[in-house]
Image 1 (tube, rainbow, N blue to C red):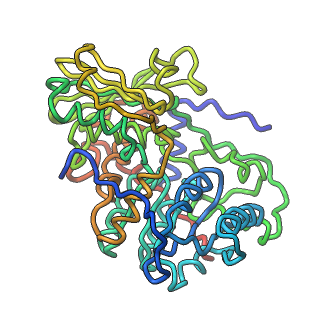
Image 2: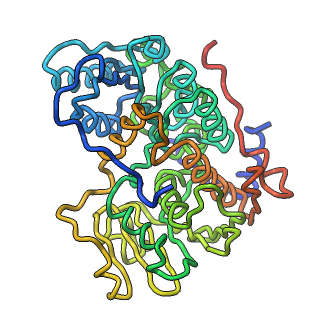
Length: 432
């Protein structure tokens, strides 16, 4: 196995520069209880069906007003697994398979798409889907650069498409309750927010070249898509692309940050802005908003070792904490909500059943409901744009190892040409 290169600060800069030359809570509809006529159904296409997509799609298949009619994936094995899942659910063999997702987008019978490819494809596939007249549910991170997120949001507005980012914790009750406590003043004046992320990584080592498979088995050109070219290696296809700068998002900071920073943005009522300063430290990135609130992006070892804060083991993955001058609240994927002082406990509504943070059901339902109403989803393009850009700005501060100041209106760094150059990456012509 090729060992990862131990990047110095100078290495990071050299490599990157050369490469770059409403209401408190959303209204969520419940699944339809009665069968829906074919004319009223929303026909869904799937682009990229790996483990996360299978999780999402399994939830969506339960909705009687939704019909999955096609799957596109560059890997034959995944296409076949997807067909077995969908046909098995419906009890027929109707699902159509496509090697190239552009053939799926050409179909007039498809209303919406679920995009769950690797990170490198999310923005490009979402943009092509919108231009083809499809509404889009995209897994996160929705763009691997600031420029990707800007173009994606702009395209959704220009094409008048409904968009939902796969930051489903906005639709999960315990996270909603924590945000509501921040919004209603129960915590007093909010002053500090904590968002957990993995320890960032920056790796661009190439694995040894292997013989490319038959394109029907795995289309390597389409797998790479807009990402920089490199030789085929099966380990990339099997998941080894994670942590690779060319394929991943913001030094892996967006793996969790797309969720946890997003929740902090929401708690701070900052969906229309983002922090104006990003200061990297050894075990965290300290961000500051114009309103004086501080956002601390905490680095957590995977799988949550000795650097993990005390609450990680109790509250599960993706924990957040919101602190005001009268108390604090924290929650995570376990569904539990912890507050201080204890007197705040009585302010929490009783819940019969905890919903884990990975549960996508309500978030997907919100997407499909807004396809019908043409309304704004819980994680609409503007929400995605600002929370994702905040994550990318923090990641670049970590990469460059210096404090960066940011203009949230112009969406550019202040007096830092090097950082501004890194807001975008070159895009490979994968259509050639």
